[in-house]
Image 1: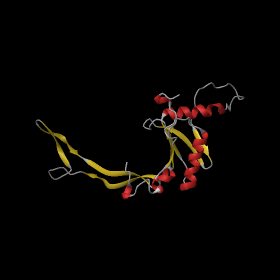
Image 2: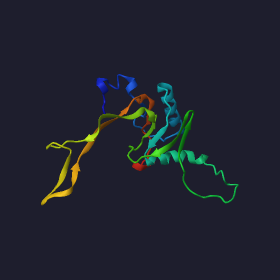
Image 3: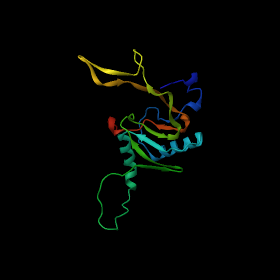
Length: 184
């Protein structure tokens, strides 16, 4: 991660920082108020709406823990009761926000990311193309111990960087208790 893009420090230029909701290292439960505050702050500061939420499985469990008391069985009076367990989707709904909480196993424990996905993109600095090898061309016969195989070997590549055009339009909630790392 670049800490000072174009020589500009994130600590000096607030526009280069995302919204960080931390608790100074003191662990806390994920709550509806934390999520709503993060969604509201990105809207007020950057004018962006959260449209993607990412967490690991532990934060998804903690989210389900505080929304499960509000679970309703909408089809209970129309035939047999369905006794399934779990959720089809964990929805985050706030003014202007309606997205699913997505579980990504690569997200660090104790964090929930609330993103304005349109601020992310790929910058292509080198278009996909053949890569020339030492002896003058991209395609070569496949060498074997007895000569060559019937085929060609070639290398292709490109150069892309992930970018975020408006870091302030995104938020992260940190220091949340996470059952994956043994927090209760």
